Image (cartoon, rainbow, N blue to C red; front, side, top):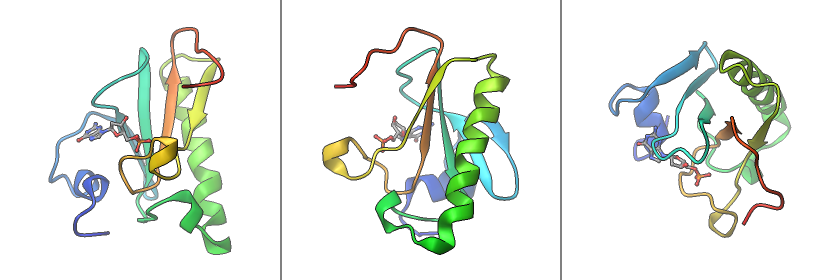
Length: 113
Ligand code: DGP
């Protein structure tokens, strides 16, 4: 846990969130500013600021993140969806705790803006 991390505060229950999925390693909740009918964030309970900080020891937690993304999409009844990880401000990362966006429920344009 990182003291000043927004998503660590959500994990600790200090900031409310709408839970979609939870287990011992991950937590998933609805994005506060959804960009699609389904917009869920999946976060590892382990604090990793950005995916470029990950090392070999994080392989399992990052692989599991994708699997939880699949499970979350299924919970929302989606067969087609997008899984996105932004890394760094220029790529759109605004919260520095690794998170997977699960987006779906409408046609999604490619490439993103
Ligand atoms: P990114 O831009 O990739 O770092 O995504 C961060 C996302 O986090 C963004 O889509 C908005 C969301 N977000 C920011 N603050 C909160 C919050 O307090 N609660 C929830 N549920 N989502 C938040």
